[in-house]
Amino acid sequence: MNNLAHTLRQLCDRNRDGSHATQGDRRDCLKLMARQLKEAGFRQLKATSLNGKHVDALLGRWRNDGLSAGTIKNRMAHLRWWAEKIGRKGLIASSNIQLDIPKRVFVTNVSKAAEVQGKLGRVSDPYVRASLELQRVFGLRREESIKFQPHYADQGDHLKIKGSWTKGGRERVIPIISSEQRAALDFAHKLVGERSLIPADKTYIEQRHVYDRQCKMAELKRMHGLRHAYAQLRYEALTGWKPPAAGGPSTQSLTVSQRLADFEARLIISRELGHERIEITKVYLGS
Image (cartoon, rainbow, N blue to C red; front, side, top):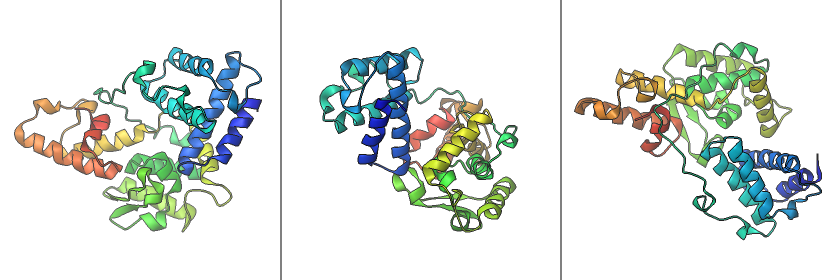
Protein backbone atom coordinates (compact mmCIF):
# COMPACT_ATOMS: atom_id res chain seq x y z
CA MET A 1 0.00 0.00 0.00
CA ASN A 2 1.51 3.35 -1.04
CA ASN A 3 1.69 6.31 1.33
CA LEU A 4 -1.33 8.05 -0.17
CA ALA A 5 -3.48 4.93 0.06
CA HIS A 6 -2.38 4.46 3.67
CA THR A 7 -3.23 8.02 4.73
CA LEU A 8 -6.56 7.87 2.87
CA ARG A 9 -7.38 4.69 4.76
CA GLN A 10 -6.61 6.52 8.01
CA LEU A 11 -8.84 9.40 6.89
CA CYS A 12 -11.70 6.96 6.32
CA ASP A 13 -11.12 5.31 9.70
CA ARG A 14 -11.35 8.69 11.44
CA ASN A 15 -14.47 9.78 9.55
CA ARG A 16 -17.09 7.05 9.43
CA ASP A 17 -19.82 9.00 7.67
CA GLY A 18 -22.77 7.10 6.20
CA SER A 19 -23.79 3.46 6.21
CA HIS A 20 -21.35 0.56 6.23
CA ALA A 21 -21.97 0.14 2.51
CA THR A 22 -21.24 3.82 1.81
CA GLN A 23 -18.07 3.65 3.89
CA GLY A 24 -16.93 0.54 2.02
CA ASP A 25 -17.61 2.10 -1.38
CA ARG A 26 -15.74 5.25 -0.34
CA ARG A 27 -12.74 3.30 0.92
CA ASP A 28 -12.53 1.27 -2.29
CA CYS A 29 -12.91 4.34 -4.50
CA LEU A 30 -10.24 6.33 -2.66
CA LYS A 31 -7.88 3.36 -2.86
CA LEU A 32 -8.45 3.33 -6.63
CA MET A 33 -7.73 7.08 -6.81
CA ALA A 34 -4.47 6.60 -4.94
CA ARG A 35 -3.37 3.98 -7.47
CA GLN A 36 -4.42 6.08 -10.44
CA LEU A 37 -2.57 9.15 -9.15
CA LYS A 38 0.55 7.03 -8.72
CA GLU A 39 0.16 5.76 -12.29
CA ALA A 40 -0.16 9.39 -13.43
CA GLY A 41 3.30 10.10 -12.01
CA PHE A 42 2.44 11.67 -8.67
CA ARG A 43 4.74 10.39 -5.94
CA GLN A 44 5.14 10.89 -2.19
CA LEU A 45 1.56 12.12 -1.77
CA LYS A 46 -0.44 12.11 1.45
CA ALA A 47 -4.16 12.62 1.91
CA THR A 48 -3.47 16.26 2.79
CA SER A 49 -1.57 16.80 -0.49
CA LEU A 50 -4.70 16.96 -2.66
CA ASN A 51 -4.79 19.96 -4.99
CA GLY A 52 -6.27 21.05 -8.30
CA LYS A 53 -3.81 19.25 -10.55
CA HIS A 54 -4.63 15.96 -8.86
CA VAL A 55 -8.35 16.55 -9.37
CA ASP A 56 -7.76 17.40 -13.03
CA ALA A 57 -5.61 14.29 -13.51
CA LEU A 58 -8.26 12.00 -12.06
CA LEU A 59 -11.10 13.58 -13.99
CA GLY A 60 -9.08 13.38 -17.20
CA ARG A 61 -8.28 9.71 -16.57
CA TRP A 62 -11.94 8.85 -16.01
CA ARG A 63 -12.99 10.62 -19.18
CA ASN A 64 -10.29 8.88 -21.19
CA ASP A 65 -11.41 5.55 -19.75
CA GLY A 66 -14.88 6.21 -21.18
CA LEU A 67 -16.68 6.00 -17.84
CA SER A 68 -20.37 6.87 -17.76
CA ALA A 69 -21.56 10.18 -16.37
CA GLY A 70 -23.12 8.34 -13.44
CA THR A 71 -19.86 6.60 -12.51
CA ILE A 72 -17.89 9.83 -12.73
CA LYS A 73 -20.44 11.63 -10.56
CA ASN A 74 -20.21 8.90 -7.93
CA ARG A 75 -16.41 9.17 -7.89
CA MET A 76 -16.59 12.96 -7.70
CA ALA A 77 -18.76 12.63 -4.59
CA HIS A 78 -16.01 10.62 -2.90
CA LEU A 79 -13.38 13.09 -4.14
CA ARG A 80 -15.35 16.01 -2.68
CA TRP A 81 -15.61 14.10 0.61
CA TRP A 82 -11.81 13.75 0.62
CA ALA A 83 -11.33 17.47 -0.04
CA GLU A 84 -13.81 18.42 2.68
CA LYS A 85 -12.18 16.19 5.31
CA ILE A 86 -8.77 17.80 4.78
CA GLY A 87 -10.23 21.30 5.01
CA ARG A 88 -10.31 22.08 1.27
CA LYS A 89 -14.02 21.99 0.55
CA GLY A 90 -13.73 24.81 -2.00
CA LEU A 91 -11.07 23.00 -4.03
CA ILE A 92 -13.65 21.30 -6.28
CA ALA A 93 -16.58 23.08 -7.90
CA SER A 94 -19.83 22.10 -6.22
CA SER A 95 -21.63 21.82 -9.57
CA ASN A 96 -20.81 18.98 -11.96
CA ILE A 97 -21.93 21.23 -14.81
CA GLN A 98 -18.98 23.54 -14.05
CA LEU A 99 -16.71 20.51 -14.53
CA ASP A 100 -18.34 19.62 -17.86
CA ILE A 101 -19.72 16.37 -16.46
CA PRO A 102 -22.94 15.66 -18.39
CA LYS A 103 -26.24 14.70 -16.86
CA ARG A 104 -27.03 11.04 -16.41
CA VAL A 105 -29.00 9.39 -19.20
CA PHE A 106 -31.69 7.32 -17.50
CA VAL A 107 -33.94 6.23 -20.34
CA THR A 108 -32.37 4.41 -23.28
CA ASN A 109 -34.99 1.75 -24.08
CA VAL A 110 -32.07 -0.68 -24.16
CA SER A 111 -32.43 -3.60 -21.76
CA LYS A 112 -29.84 -3.94 -19.00
CA ALA A 113 -31.33 -7.17 -17.74
CA ALA A 114 -28.69 -9.72 -16.77
CA GLU A 115 -29.03 -13.42 -17.40
CA VAL A 116 -26.84 -15.31 -14.95
CA GLN A 117 -28.28 -18.80 -14.73
CA GLY A 118 -25.65 -20.28 -17.03
CA LYS A 119 -22.83 -18.86 -14.94
CA LEU A 120 -24.14 -19.42 -11.41
CA GLY A 121 -22.54 -22.86 -11.39
CA ARG A 122 -19.14 -21.14 -11.46
CA VAL A 123 -19.84 -19.44 -8.11
CA SER A 124 -18.20 -21.63 -5.47
CA ASP A 125 -19.20 -19.68 -2.35
CA PRO A 126 -22.68 -20.89 -1.29
CA TYR A 127 -23.49 -17.60 0.47
CA VAL A 128 -22.76 -15.60 -2.67
CA ARG A 129 -24.72 -18.02 -4.80
CA ALA A 130 -27.71 -17.70 -2.45
CA SER A 131 -27.46 -13.90 -2.63
CA LEU A 132 -27.34 -13.94 -6.43
CA GLU A 133 -30.37 -16.22 -6.65
CA LEU A 134 -32.32 -13.86 -4.39
CA GLN A 135 -31.30 -10.90 -6.53
CA ARG A 136 -32.45 -12.74 -9.63
CA VAL A 137 -35.88 -13.82 -8.44
CA PHE A 138 -36.78 -10.91 -6.12
CA GLY A 139 -34.92 -7.97 -7.65
CA LEU A 140 -32.93 -7.28 -4.48
CA ARG A 141 -30.01 -4.88 -4.35
CA ARG A 142 -26.57 -6.32 -3.64
CA GLU A 143 -26.53 -5.08 -0.04
CA GLU A 144 -30.03 -6.42 0.62
CA SER A 145 -29.13 -9.84 -0.74
CA ILE A 146 -26.01 -10.09 1.44
CA LYS A 147 -27.68 -8.90 4.65
CA PHE A 148 -30.74 -11.05 3.93
CA GLN A 149 -32.13 -13.09 6.86
CA PRO A 150 -34.52 -15.73 5.46
CA HIS A 151 -36.14 -16.53 8.81
CA TYR A 152 -37.13 -12.85 9.18
CA ALA A 153 -37.98 -12.06 5.57
CA ASP A 154 -39.97 -15.15 4.59
CA GLN A 155 -43.60 -14.52 5.52
CA GLY A 156 -45.03 -17.37 3.47
CA ASP A 157 -46.67 -15.47 0.63
CA HIS A 158 -44.40 -12.41 0.69
CA LEU A 159 -40.98 -11.16 1.72
CA LYS A 160 -40.58 -8.51 4.37
CA ILE A 161 -37.44 -6.52 3.63
CA LYS A 162 -35.93 -4.95 6.75
CA GLY A 163 -35.13 -1.24 6.61
CA SER A 164 -31.58 -1.74 7.88
CA TRP A 165 -30.80 -3.77 4.74
CA THR A 166 -32.07 -1.17 2.30
CA LYS A 167 -31.02 2.03 0.62
CA GLY A 168 -32.62 4.88 2.55
CA GLY A 169 -33.86 2.59 5.33
CA ARG A 170 -37.21 1.96 3.65
CA GLU A 171 -38.92 -1.32 4.51
CA ARG A 172 -40.92 -2.98 1.76
CA VAL A 173 -42.87 -6.08 0.80
CA ILE A 174 -42.29 -8.32 -2.23
CA PRO A 175 -44.78 -11.05 -3.18
CA ILE A 176 -43.70 -14.69 -3.39
CA ILE A 177 -45.49 -15.96 -6.50
CA SER A 178 -43.23 -18.47 -8.24
CA SER A 179 -41.61 -21.83 -7.61
CA GLU A 180 -38.21 -20.27 -8.45
CA GLN A 181 -38.65 -17.77 -5.65
CA ARG A 182 -39.60 -20.50 -3.19
CA ALA A 183 -36.61 -22.61 -4.26
CA ALA A 184 -34.22 -19.68 -3.70
CA LEU A 185 -35.68 -19.11 -0.25
CA ASP A 186 -35.51 -22.79 0.68
CA PHE A 187 -31.83 -22.85 -0.30
CA ALA A 188 -31.15 -19.79 1.89
CA HIS A 189 -33.09 -21.29 4.82
CA LYS A 190 -31.12 -24.51 4.62
CA LEU A 191 -27.81 -22.69 4.33
CA VAL A 192 -28.07 -20.24 7.24
CA GLY A 193 -31.04 -21.14 9.42
CA GLU A 194 -31.76 -18.10 11.59
CA ARG A 195 -28.64 -16.19 10.57
CA SER A 196 -28.06 -13.83 7.63
CA LEU A 197 -26.20 -14.55 4.41
CA ILE A 198 -23.09 -13.07 6.01
CA PRO A 199 -20.96 -15.93 7.41
CA ALA A 200 -20.45 -15.81 11.18
CA ASP A 201 -16.72 -15.12 10.81
CA LYS A 202 -17.14 -12.13 8.46
CA THR A 203 -18.42 -8.57 8.53
CA TYR A 204 -20.72 -7.21 5.84
CA ILE A 205 -17.83 -5.44 4.08
CA GLU A 206 -15.71 -8.59 4.12
CA GLN A 207 -18.53 -10.64 2.62
CA ARG A 208 -19.17 -7.98 0.02
CA HIS A 209 -15.55 -8.32 -1.07
CA VAL A 210 -16.07 -12.10 -1.32
CA TYR A 211 -19.20 -11.45 -3.40
CA ASP A 212 -17.31 -9.13 -5.75
CA ARG A 213 -14.40 -11.57 -6.17
CA GLN A 214 -16.71 -14.51 -6.81
CA CYS A 215 -18.64 -12.55 -9.45
CA LYS A 216 -15.41 -11.53 -11.15
CA MET A 217 -14.11 -15.11 -11.19
CA ALA A 218 -17.42 -16.33 -12.62
CA GLU A 219 -17.36 -13.58 -15.27
CA LEU A 220 -20.55 -12.11 -13.86
CA LYS A 221 -20.75 -8.38 -14.55
CA ARG A 222 -23.19 -5.58 -13.83
CA MET A 223 -25.24 -7.60 -11.37
CA HIS A 224 -27.56 -4.63 -10.86
CA GLY A 225 -29.00 -5.86 -14.15
CA LEU A 226 -30.72 -8.59 -12.17
CA ARG A 227 -33.09 -5.92 -10.85
CA HIS A 228 -33.79 -4.89 -14.43
CA ALA A 229 -34.59 -8.50 -15.31
CA TYR A 230 -36.93 -8.84 -12.33
CA ALA A 231 -38.72 -5.59 -13.18
CA GLN A 232 -39.18 -6.59 -16.82
CA LEU A 233 -40.57 -10.02 -15.95
CA ARG A 234 -42.96 -8.49 -13.39
CA TYR A 235 -44.12 -5.92 -15.92
CA GLU A 236 -44.95 -8.59 -18.47
CA ALA A 237 -46.77 -10.67 -15.83
CA LEU A 238 -48.81 -7.66 -14.70
CA THR A 239 -49.66 -6.21 -18.12
CA GLY A 240 -49.49 -9.12 -20.56
CA TRP A 241 -46.89 -7.50 -22.81
CA LYS A 242 -43.16 -6.81 -22.67
CA PRO A 243 -41.87 -3.41 -21.52
CA PRO A 244 -40.30 -1.05 -24.07
CA ALA A 245 -36.76 -1.88 -22.88
CA ALA A 246 -37.35 -5.55 -23.71
CA GLY A 247 -38.84 -4.94 -27.14
CA GLY A 248 -42.42 -4.16 -26.14
CA PRO A 249 -44.54 -1.21 -27.32
CA SER A 250 -43.67 2.33 -26.29
CA THR A 251 -45.95 4.02 -23.78
CA GLN A 252 -46.97 6.53 -26.45
CA SER A 253 -48.39 3.75 -28.61
CA LEU A 254 -50.59 2.23 -25.88
CA THR A 255 -54.36 2.57 -25.80
CA VAL A 256 -56.05 4.39 -22.92
CA SER A 257 -56.80 1.14 -21.08
CA GLN A 258 -53.28 -0.13 -21.71
CA ARG A 259 -51.79 3.07 -20.33
CA LEU A 260 -53.76 2.56 -17.14
CA ALA A 261 -52.42 -0.99 -16.84
CA ASP A 262 -48.92 0.32 -17.60
CA PHE A 263 -49.20 2.94 -14.85
CA GLU A 264 -50.49 0.46 -12.27
CA ALA A 265 -47.75 -2.05 -13.13
CA ARG A 266 -45.04 0.59 -12.83
CA LEU A 267 -46.41 1.70 -9.47
CA ILE A 268 -46.30 -1.87 -8.14
CA ILE A 269 -42.81 -2.52 -9.51
CA SER A 270 -41.48 0.76 -8.13
CA ARG A 271 -42.61 -0.25 -4.64
CA GLU A 272 -41.25 -3.79 -4.96
CA LEU A 273 -37.86 -2.44 -5.99
CA GLY A 274 -37.78 -0.05 -3.04
CA HIS A 275 -38.25 3.23 -4.91
CA GLU A 276 -40.63 6.03 -4.01
CA ARG A 277 -40.93 7.55 -7.49
CA ILE A 278 -42.73 5.81 -10.33
CA GLU A 279 -40.55 7.84 -12.73
CA ILE A 280 -37.55 5.65 -11.79
CA THR A 281 -39.16 2.65 -13.50
CA LYS A 282 -38.13 4.16 -16.85
CA VAL A 283 -34.59 3.12 -15.96
CA TYR A 284 -35.65 -0.52 -15.73
CA LEU A 285 -38.52 -0.69 -18.22
CA GLY A 286 -37.98 2.06 -20.77
CA SER A 287 -40.77 4.34 -21.90
